[in-house]
Amino acid sequence: MEVREVKQYIYENNKIELVLQELGMHHIKWHDNNSYITCGMPDGDNPQSTTIYNNPFLNVVAYTRDIVDAYGVSDIISLICFVKNLYFTNAIAWLCNLVGLDYYYKPQIQDKLLEQFKNMCSIKKHGVEEEPPLQPLDEIVLREFKSRFTHEEFVKDNISPETQREFEIGFSLRTDYYGFPRHRITIPIRDEQGTLVGVKGRLPKNVYYWSKCVDEEREKEEPKYIYLYPCPKAKIIYGLYKTQPYIKEQDEVIVCEAEKGVMQLWTYGVKNSVGIGGHEISNSQREKIVRLGVTVTIAFDKDVTLDVINKECKMLAPLCKKIYYIYDKNNILEEKESPMDNPKKWKKLYTENKYLYL
Image 1 (cartoon, rainbow, N blue to C red):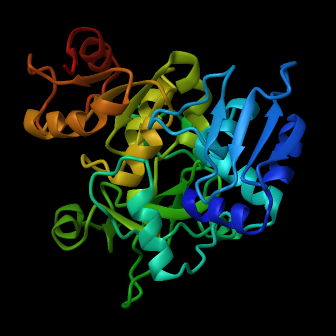
Image 2: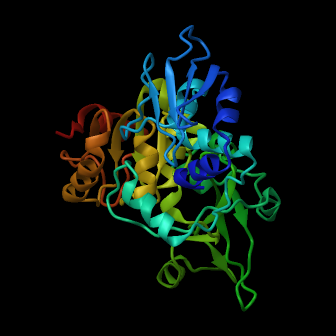
Protein backbone atom coordinates (compact mmCIF):
# COMPACT_ATOMS: atom_id res chain seq x y z
CA MET A 1 0.00 0.00 0.00
CA GLU A 2 1.03 3.59 -0.56
CA VAL A 3 2.02 5.67 2.47
CA ARG A 4 -0.71 8.23 1.80
CA GLU A 5 -3.38 5.50 1.72
CA VAL A 6 -2.33 4.08 5.07
CA LYS A 7 -2.19 7.52 6.66
CA GLN A 8 -5.58 8.41 5.22
CA TYR A 9 -7.08 5.27 6.76
CA ILE A 10 -5.56 6.01 10.18
CA TYR A 11 -6.82 9.60 10.08
CA GLU A 12 -10.35 8.75 8.93
CA ASN A 13 -10.73 5.89 11.42
CA ASN A 14 -9.24 7.65 14.46
CA LYS A 15 -6.34 5.20 14.88
CA ILE A 16 -3.63 7.70 15.86
CA GLU A 17 -3.89 7.03 19.58
CA LEU A 18 -3.78 3.26 19.01
CA VAL A 19 -0.53 3.65 17.04
CA LEU A 20 1.05 5.79 19.75
CA GLN A 21 0.07 3.32 22.46
CA GLU A 22 1.61 0.42 20.52
CA LEU A 23 4.80 2.44 20.08
CA GLY A 24 5.03 2.86 23.83
CA MET A 25 4.54 6.63 23.79
CA HIS A 26 3.44 7.96 27.19
CA HIS A 27 1.29 10.83 28.53
CA ILE A 28 -0.83 10.78 25.35
CA LYS A 29 -3.09 13.84 25.44
CA TRP A 30 -5.45 15.51 22.92
CA HIS A 31 -5.51 19.31 22.49
CA ASP A 32 -7.48 22.09 20.78
CA ASN A 33 -10.63 20.17 19.85
CA ASN A 34 -8.65 17.07 18.92
CA SER A 35 -6.54 18.89 16.35
CA TYR A 36 -3.28 17.47 17.71
CA ILE A 37 -1.81 15.12 20.33
CA THR A 38 1.18 15.56 22.61
CA CYS A 39 3.07 12.68 24.18
CA GLY A 40 6.49 11.54 25.36
CA MET A 41 9.01 9.23 23.72
CA PRO A 42 9.22 5.67 25.12
CA ASP A 43 12.74 6.28 26.45
CA GLY A 44 12.21 9.93 27.45
CA ASP A 45 10.84 11.68 30.52
CA ASN A 46 9.41 14.77 28.78
CA PRO A 47 5.61 14.22 28.57
CA GLN A 48 5.24 16.72 25.70
CA SER A 49 8.36 16.04 23.65
CA THR A 50 6.36 14.94 20.58
CA THR A 51 3.38 16.44 18.75
CA ILE A 52 1.25 14.52 16.23
CA TYR A 53 -1.20 16.50 14.12
CA ASN A 54 -4.64 15.04 13.45
CA ASN A 55 -4.77 15.64 9.69
CA PRO A 56 -4.48 13.38 6.60
CA PHE A 57 -0.70 13.81 6.56
CA LEU A 58 -0.19 12.88 10.25
CA ASN A 59 2.72 15.30 10.59
CA VAL A 60 4.95 14.82 13.63
CA VAL A 61 7.17 17.29 15.44
CA ALA A 62 9.70 15.60 17.72
CA TYR A 63 11.43 18.27 19.78
CA THR A 64 14.01 15.98 21.39
CA ARG A 65 14.71 13.50 18.57
CA ASP A 66 15.74 13.78 14.93
CA ILE A 67 13.14 11.63 13.17
CA VAL A 68 13.14 13.50 9.85
CA ASP A 69 13.70 11.06 6.97
CA ALA A 70 15.84 11.49 3.86
CA TYR A 71 12.97 13.26 2.06
CA GLY A 72 12.66 15.86 4.81
CA VAL A 73 9.41 14.28 6.03
CA SER A 74 8.52 13.97 9.70
CA ASP A 75 5.29 12.01 10.04
CA ILE A 76 3.79 8.94 11.72
CA ILE A 77 5.85 6.64 9.45
CA SER A 78 9.18 8.28 10.27
CA LEU A 79 8.21 8.16 13.96
CA ILE A 80 7.64 4.40 13.69
CA CYS A 81 10.94 3.97 11.83
CA PHE A 82 12.74 5.80 14.64
CA VAL A 83 11.06 4.13 17.63
CA LYS A 84 10.96 0.59 16.19
CA ASN A 85 14.26 0.89 14.26
CA LEU A 86 12.57 -0.25 11.04
CA TYR A 87 13.13 0.38 7.34
CA PHE A 88 10.23 2.47 6.05
CA THR A 89 8.41 -0.27 4.09
CA ASN A 90 8.73 -2.54 7.14
CA ALA A 91 7.23 0.31 9.18
CA ILE A 92 4.29 0.51 6.77
CA ALA A 93 3.80 -3.26 7.02
CA TRP A 94 3.90 -3.04 10.83
CA LEU A 95 1.32 -0.25 10.72
CA CYS A 96 -0.97 -2.15 8.33
CA ASN A 97 -0.85 -5.20 10.58
CA LEU A 98 -1.67 -3.08 13.63
CA VAL A 99 -4.75 -1.38 12.17
CA GLY A 100 -6.03 -4.39 10.23
CA LEU A 101 -5.08 -3.41 6.66
CA ASP A 102 -3.73 -5.71 3.98
CA TYR A 103 -0.23 -4.45 3.12
CA TYR A 104 -0.63 -5.69 -0.48
CA TYR A 105 -4.16 -4.41 -1.05
CA LYS A 106 -4.54 -1.16 -3.00
CA PRO A 107 -7.86 0.46 -2.06
CA GLN A 108 -9.83 2.68 -4.42
CA ILE A 109 -9.55 6.34 -3.45
CA GLN A 110 -11.88 9.00 -4.78
CA ASP A 111 -10.22 10.71 -7.75
CA LYS A 112 -10.61 14.20 -6.31
CA LEU A 113 -9.12 13.24 -2.95
CA LEU A 114 -6.28 11.33 -4.59
CA GLU A 115 -5.41 14.35 -6.74
CA GLN A 116 -5.40 16.53 -3.65
CA PHE A 117 -2.94 14.19 -1.94
CA LYS A 118 -0.67 14.14 -4.99
CA ASN A 119 -0.61 17.92 -5.13
CA MET A 120 -0.01 18.45 -1.42
CA CYS A 121 2.34 15.56 -0.67
CA SER A 122 5.69 16.91 0.51
CA ILE A 123 7.73 13.96 -0.77
CA LYS A 124 9.72 14.97 -3.84
CA LYS A 125 8.93 13.00 -6.99
CA HIS A 126 10.56 13.01 -10.42
CA GLY A 127 7.59 12.35 -12.68
CA VAL A 128 4.61 10.09 -12.09
CA GLU A 129 4.65 6.39 -12.84
CA GLU A 130 1.57 4.22 -13.09
CA GLU A 131 2.82 0.98 -11.55
CA PRO A 132 0.58 -1.94 -10.60
CA PRO A 133 0.79 -2.97 -6.94
CA LEU A 134 2.85 -5.94 -5.83
CA GLN A 135 0.80 -9.06 -5.20
CA PRO A 136 1.99 -11.88 -2.93
CA LEU A 137 2.33 -15.40 -4.31
CA ASP A 138 1.64 -18.57 -2.40
CA GLU A 139 4.96 -20.17 -1.42
CA ILE A 140 3.64 -23.43 -2.85
CA VAL A 141 4.46 -22.21 -6.39
CA LEU A 142 8.15 -22.78 -5.64
CA ARG A 143 7.48 -26.52 -5.47
CA GLU A 144 7.15 -26.41 -9.24
CA PHE A 145 10.84 -25.61 -9.56
CA LYS A 146 13.48 -28.12 -8.60
CA SER A 147 15.99 -26.60 -6.19
CA ARG A 148 17.90 -29.54 -4.72
CA PHE A 149 20.99 -29.31 -6.89
CA THR A 150 23.67 -26.80 -7.78
CA HIS A 151 23.71 -25.05 -11.16
CA GLU A 152 27.23 -25.35 -12.50
CA GLU A 153 26.58 -22.47 -14.87
CA PHE A 154 26.03 -20.19 -11.89
CA VAL A 155 29.10 -21.63 -10.15
CA LYS A 156 31.17 -20.72 -13.21
CA ASP A 157 29.69 -17.23 -12.91
CA ASN A 158 31.01 -17.06 -9.33
CA ILE A 159 27.75 -17.78 -7.50
CA SER A 160 28.59 -20.44 -4.94
CA PRO A 161 26.34 -23.43 -4.14
CA GLU A 162 25.77 -21.93 -0.68
CA THR A 163 24.63 -18.64 -2.20
CA GLN A 164 22.37 -20.47 -4.65
CA ARG A 165 20.66 -22.18 -1.73
CA GLU A 166 20.48 -18.91 0.21
CA PHE A 167 18.62 -17.24 -2.66
CA GLU A 168 16.51 -20.36 -3.45
CA ILE A 169 17.74 -20.83 -7.03
CA GLY A 170 15.76 -23.55 -8.80
CA PHE A 171 15.08 -25.01 -12.23
CA SER A 172 11.98 -24.96 -14.43
CA LEU A 173 11.05 -27.93 -16.61
CA ARG A 174 8.10 -26.28 -18.30
CA THR A 175 7.36 -27.27 -21.90
CA ASP A 176 6.26 -25.17 -24.85
CA TYR A 177 3.18 -25.62 -27.08
CA TYR A 178 4.84 -28.45 -29.00
CA GLY A 179 5.92 -30.33 -25.90
CA PHE A 180 9.57 -29.36 -26.08
CA PRO A 181 11.20 -28.47 -22.75
CA ARG A 182 11.90 -24.81 -22.07
CA HIS A 183 14.39 -25.24 -19.27
CA ARG A 184 15.17 -22.14 -17.27
CA ILE A 185 17.12 -21.42 -14.10
CA THR A 186 14.62 -19.86 -11.69
CA ILE A 187 15.15 -16.91 -9.35
CA PRO A 188 12.42 -16.25 -6.76
CA ILE A 189 11.69 -12.53 -6.44
CA ARG A 190 10.88 -11.34 -2.92
CA ASP A 191 10.01 -7.85 -1.73
CA GLU A 192 11.52 -6.02 1.25
CA GLN A 193 9.29 -7.99 3.62
CA GLY A 194 10.62 -11.28 2.24
CA THR A 195 7.24 -12.03 0.63
CA LEU A 196 7.32 -13.98 -2.62
CA VAL A 197 5.96 -11.73 -5.40
CA GLY A 198 7.39 -13.24 -8.59
CA VAL A 199 9.64 -15.84 -10.20
CA LYS A 200 12.15 -14.99 -12.90
CA GLY A 201 13.53 -17.54 -15.35
CA ARG A 202 16.95 -17.37 -17.00
CA LEU A 203 17.74 -19.27 -20.19
CA PRO A 204 20.72 -21.54 -19.45
CA LYS A 205 23.62 -22.14 -21.77
CA ASN A 206 24.31 -25.37 -23.65
CA VAL A 207 20.74 -26.67 -23.78
CA TYR A 208 20.30 -29.76 -25.96
CA TYR A 209 17.14 -30.82 -27.82
CA TRP A 210 17.29 -34.15 -29.60
CA SER A 211 21.08 -34.37 -29.00
CA LYS A 212 21.61 -30.99 -30.67
CA CYS A 213 22.84 -27.86 -28.91
CA VAL A 214 20.45 -25.07 -29.84
CA ASP A 215 21.90 -22.21 -27.82
CA GLU A 216 22.35 -19.84 -30.74
CA GLU A 217 18.95 -20.61 -32.26
CA ARG A 218 17.18 -20.16 -28.93
CA GLU A 219 18.93 -16.88 -28.16
CA LYS A 220 17.62 -15.46 -31.43
CA GLU A 221 14.07 -16.58 -30.66
CA GLU A 222 13.78 -16.11 -26.90
CA PRO A 223 14.86 -13.50 -24.36
CA LYS A 224 17.49 -14.51 -21.83
CA TYR A 225 15.19 -13.57 -18.95
CA ILE A 226 11.42 -13.93 -18.64
CA TYR A 227 9.02 -13.85 -15.70
CA LEU A 228 7.45 -17.25 -15.08
CA TYR A 229 5.32 -15.52 -12.44
CA PRO A 230 5.22 -11.81 -13.33
CA CYS A 231 5.60 -8.87 -10.98
CA PRO A 232 6.10 -5.12 -11.56
CA LYS A 233 9.88 -4.89 -11.99
CA ALA A 234 9.89 -1.16 -11.27
CA LYS A 235 8.80 -1.79 -7.68
CA ILE A 236 11.40 -4.43 -6.86
CA ILE A 237 14.66 -3.88 -5.01
CA TYR A 238 16.08 -7.37 -5.31
CA GLY A 239 17.78 -8.85 -2.26
CA LEU A 240 16.91 -6.04 0.17
CA TYR A 241 15.08 -8.39 2.53
CA LYS A 242 18.42 -10.18 3.04
CA THR A 243 20.95 -7.40 2.60
CA GLN A 244 19.34 -4.61 4.63
CA PRO A 245 21.17 -5.41 7.92
CA TYR A 246 24.53 -5.37 6.10
CA ILE A 247 23.63 -2.14 4.29
CA LYS A 248 22.96 -0.54 7.67
CA GLU A 249 26.17 -1.99 9.11
CA GLN A 250 28.33 -0.75 6.19
CA ASP A 251 26.39 2.53 5.82
CA GLU A 252 26.41 1.89 2.08
CA VAL A 253 24.23 0.25 -0.55
CA ILE A 254 25.78 -1.01 -3.80
CA VAL A 255 23.23 -0.81 -6.62
CA CYS A 256 23.68 -3.56 -9.22
CA GLU A 257 21.74 -4.10 -12.41
CA ALA A 258 20.92 -7.80 -12.15
CA GLU A 259 19.96 -10.31 -9.49
CA LYS A 260 23.11 -12.24 -10.37
CA GLY A 261 25.24 -9.27 -9.29
CA VAL A 262 23.73 -9.38 -5.81
CA MET A 263 24.41 -13.11 -5.56
CA GLN A 264 27.97 -12.76 -6.88
CA LEU A 265 28.81 -10.08 -4.33
CA TRP A 266 27.19 -12.18 -1.59
CA THR A 267 29.52 -15.03 -2.59
CA TYR A 268 32.51 -12.66 -2.27
CA GLY A 269 31.37 -11.68 1.23
CA VAL A 270 30.02 -8.30 0.09
CA LYS A 271 26.46 -8.44 1.38
CA ASN A 272 25.35 -4.81 1.19
CA SER A 273 24.01 -4.74 -2.37
CA VAL A 274 20.66 -4.70 -4.19
CA GLY A 275 19.52 -5.24 -7.78
CA ILE A 276 17.16 -3.07 -9.80
CA GLY A 277 16.67 -5.26 -12.89
CA GLY A 278 18.29 -2.86 -15.35
CA HIS A 279 20.18 0.44 -15.48
CA GLU A 280 17.21 2.79 -15.06
CA ILE A 281 16.08 3.40 -11.49
CA SER A 282 12.32 3.88 -11.23
CA ASN A 283 10.67 6.39 -8.91
CA SER A 284 9.58 3.59 -6.61
CA GLN A 285 13.08 2.07 -6.51
CA ARG A 286 14.67 5.48 -6.04
CA GLU A 287 12.48 6.23 -3.04
CA LYS A 288 13.32 2.87 -1.44
CA ILE A 289 17.05 3.45 -1.99
CA VAL A 290 16.95 6.98 -0.60
CA ARG A 291 14.93 5.87 2.44
CA LEU A 292 17.80 3.60 3.44
CA GLY A 293 19.61 6.77 4.50
CA VAL A 294 23.06 5.52 3.50
CA THR A 295 25.79 6.22 0.94
CA VAL A 296 24.89 4.91 -2.52
CA THR A 297 27.37 3.28 -4.92
CA ILE A 298 26.10 2.64 -8.45
CA ALA A 299 27.77 -0.35 -10.12
CA PHE A 300 26.31 -0.81 -13.58
CA ASP A 301 27.60 -3.02 -16.40
CA LYS A 302 30.44 -2.19 -18.79
CA ASP A 303 28.11 -1.22 -21.65
CA VAL A 304 26.30 1.52 -19.68
CA THR A 305 27.56 4.97 -20.68
CA LEU A 306 28.84 7.58 -18.28
CA ASP A 307 25.98 9.88 -19.34
CA VAL A 308 23.42 7.31 -18.18
CA ILE A 309 25.27 6.81 -14.89
CA ASN A 310 25.46 10.57 -14.30
CA LYS A 311 21.74 10.90 -15.02
CA GLU A 312 20.90 8.37 -12.31
CA CYS A 313 23.36 9.96 -9.89
CA LYS A 314 21.82 13.37 -10.49
CA MET A 315 18.35 12.06 -9.62
CA LEU A 316 19.59 10.52 -6.36
CA ALA A 317 22.11 13.14 -5.26
CA PRO A 318 19.81 15.78 -3.70
CA LEU A 319 18.46 13.27 -1.18
CA CYS A 320 21.40 10.99 -0.42
CA LYS A 321 24.41 11.31 1.89
CA LYS A 322 26.92 10.68 -0.88
CA ILE A 323 26.76 9.14 -4.33
CA TYR A 324 29.60 7.11 -5.78
CA TYR A 325 29.73 5.29 -9.09
CA ILE A 326 31.99 2.64 -10.52
CA TYR A 327 33.20 3.38 -14.02
CA ASP A 328 35.74 1.29 -15.89
CA LYS A 329 38.05 4.00 -17.20
CA ASN A 330 40.98 1.58 -17.27
CA ASN A 331 39.23 -1.08 -19.39
CA ILE A 332 39.44 -3.78 -16.77
CA LEU A 333 36.17 -5.35 -17.94
CA GLU A 334 35.31 -7.10 -21.18
CA GLU A 335 32.46 -5.78 -23.33
CA LYS A 336 29.07 -6.28 -21.59
CA GLU A 337 30.83 -7.68 -18.50
CA SER A 338 29.42 -6.60 -15.15
CA PRO A 339 31.68 -5.30 -12.36
CA MET A 340 30.71 -8.31 -10.22
CA ASP A 341 31.45 -11.11 -12.69
CA ASN A 342 35.02 -11.61 -11.49
CA PRO A 343 36.05 -11.21 -7.81
CA LYS A 344 39.53 -9.87 -8.59
CA LYS A 345 38.17 -7.35 -11.10
CA TRP A 346 35.47 -6.33 -8.64
CA LYS A 347 38.03 -5.59 -5.93
CA LYS A 348 40.14 -3.53 -8.34
CA LEU A 349 37.13 -1.62 -9.65
CA TYR A 350 35.77 -0.88 -6.18
CA THR A 351 39.10 0.32 -4.83
CA GLU A 352 40.55 2.08 -7.88
CA ASN A 353 37.65 2.94 -10.18
CA LYS A 354 35.07 4.28 -7.72
CA TYR A 355 34.32 7.97 -8.13
CA LEU A 356 32.42 10.48 -6.03
CA TYR A 357 29.56 12.20 -7.84
CA LEU A 358 29.77 15.94 -7.21
